[in-house]
Length: 316
Image (spheres, rainbow, N blue to C red):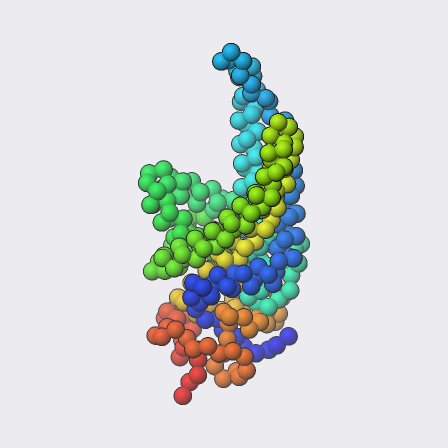
């Protein structure tokens, strides 16, 4: 491993998206396995639950299903929703571990990524609950507050997983990081979600012939929905998680002069294993020599709470 000291630099919106794509490609196999192990069984269970739901047919304006069957259907749908929330949270945590390893230049596998997520699952679900409820209330009250809160709290999950700050503390920490960077954060989130939606839509088009052919066959229809839904989730969850992680690291670089060694300790990387690759977000420390050393943005320097000293770049 290279021992060249490395520090991170702020990125523009295009660079963050590019960094997310590169991480996605670099860790694709690891994230694909971690997400598939979680998502595929859940989609199978979803299909089985959906197929077990009672048929609701209309005869002379009256439903033929009993009240008990209707409540059973509601309970089954609620169960599907809860299972999907849990599986998505675990998949996101596993992907963030893989992204963090990319920043550190350490190796990991999908099993280690999933263990990382499982150890923090309780705190992650609590954060997901309070985040989702408050943002939903914001959307119900008026769409604008919901959008604003969604962006302001967009890096709460990385805060929880990397820094160990939980619950409302993670939301407050995310708010402080995004403050004065709301519009750039909203822009990169919009681009990432548009790309993910385009991929999901493309997969949906592939599924369309089966869905049309199976519209009169409940089993075929639900099976096609489950299979192509699982494929879309497995392909898009890692990408969105990678972009969110890049946003988080970039915000910390801009405001705090982010320290890779501290992050390594937080996520349990082996001591002395940090050897970051020279990706577009990194550069050798001043005086280290070698590598690509782009000039820092004009006037940029970490806040006083971060490391002191001159900004990165050639010094006279």
